[in-house]
Length: 27
Image 1 (cartoon, rainbow, N blue to C red):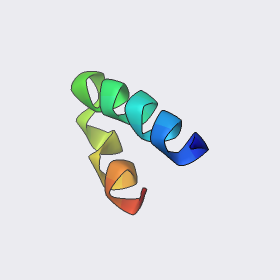
Image 2: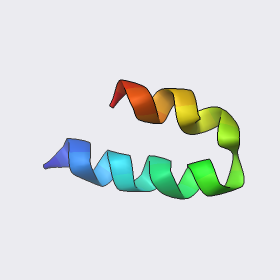
Image 3: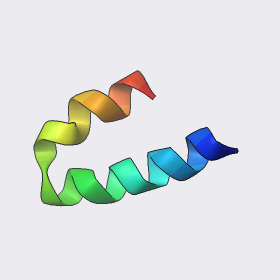
Image 4: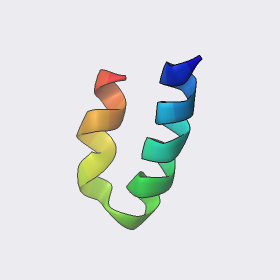
């Protein structure tokens, strides 16, 4: 459950900071 919530937060950050794309792949 927490992983999905974190993924949503990361996806929002990706729109603002493309650098987080790498982190999003790890999740």
